Length: 454
Ligand code: GLN
Image (spheres, rainbow, N blue to C red):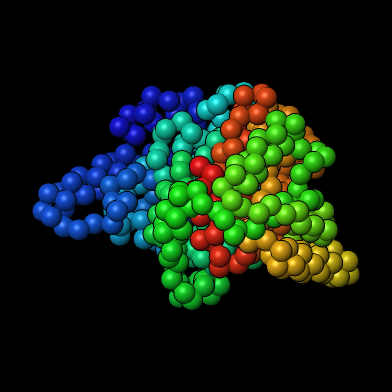
C-alpha cells in the first residue's frame, strides 16, 4: 500500500531520492512467511520505514543530497540500518535532504526540492524534509532522520509530524555521513509519540563502532509513552524557556504553544518560567562550530575516494587540480559557504577568536541547561519561530534561513534530547510544533510529556 501511495504522489512531493520497492517487498514477504510459521518477531516487523539519504545503506545509492556522491553505492550498512534489517522492517527507500544536511528547507538538495504536503508552495523544513514529508503525505509510516541543529525537529514541526533528537550518543553514528560529529544524532520521524518511542528503542543502544555511543541500553521509552497517555502529570514541573518565545515568534505559533501549556496545566503539571540567557548566543556559536567540524569532515570528498571525479578542463591532471575541479563541480553553494566559514574559523590566528569563543559559549549553554533543569523536569518552547515559509523566501538570505533554527540548536550544543510534536494549526492553516527538552539520558521524560499532550 505504501509503495502504491509513493507511486501515486511522490512525483508531486519528491520525498524520495531512491525507492527500493523490490527489497521492501522481499522483506514484507519474509515477515509474512515467518509469522505463518509462528516465529516470534519484533513488534515493528513488517512496518515499512524510509531512511534519510545521509545514512549509509549496503548496496543502495547514498548521496547525502549531494552531486558529490551521485552513484555511490556503499559496501556496508550503518548500525541503525543493521538493526532495522534485523527486526525486519521493509525499507521503502532513501529520502531527500539538504546537501550534507545543511539547511532548513530542503531547497539545497542536488535532487530537487521536496514539497510540503500541507501546501506545495511551502518548504517541508530541513535538512530532513524528505523524511518528514514522506510521513505527512502517508508515503511511509516511519522514517529515520538526523539532527545536528534541528533537522529532525523543525521538519517535524512544519509538517505536523513527530520528530525526536535523542540524547547525544543514544543512537550509533556509525554509518552516518558526518556533518558535525559533536552535534550529529540520528532519531525517529513518526506520526505518533509512541511510534517514536518504539523506533528509538529499536535503533538505540551501545555500539563499539562509535566511540561516543552511550554504554547503557536505550529502553523505557515505550513504557514512558504509555504512562504519559494516562494524562496525569501531577508533580511534574514544566519550564517555559523565556528566551525561546515572544518576540520574533509568529502569533499563531505562540497561540498554539500557549494552549498546549494550558493543556499541561490541566493535567496537573506545575508550570514555571526559566531563563537561559546564553541561548541568545547559541545560533552564533552553532554557525561557527558546525561549519568548522563540517569543513574537516568533508575534506574526504577529494575526487579520489568516493563518488564524483572531475578532471580539470585544461592543463595538467595533478591530484590537487582534480580535487579542486571535483569539489568545485560537486558541492553546492551552501556547502561551499560553510567549508569556507569553517576553514576560516579554524585557521591559525583566528582559532581563539572564533572557534575557541564558540566552544566557550557552548559551555555556558550547557550550564544554562543544568541550572534550568534544577527548576524544571522538562523545558518547552515552540519548535520553530514560524510555520513553513514559502519556497525561495529565505534562499538568498542565509542569515534569515539560519534564524529558523533558533529554538532547536541549544539542544545540540548541549547534547540534551529534544522532541517536536504537533500542536495544531496556525492562522495560516499550517502546522505548529511544540518542543520538549529533557536532561541528558532522560529521554523517557519527553516521551511521557509528549504522549500526554498527543
Ligand atoms: N538548519 C540546520 C543547519 O543548516 C540544520 C542542520 C541539521 O540538523 N542537519 O545547519
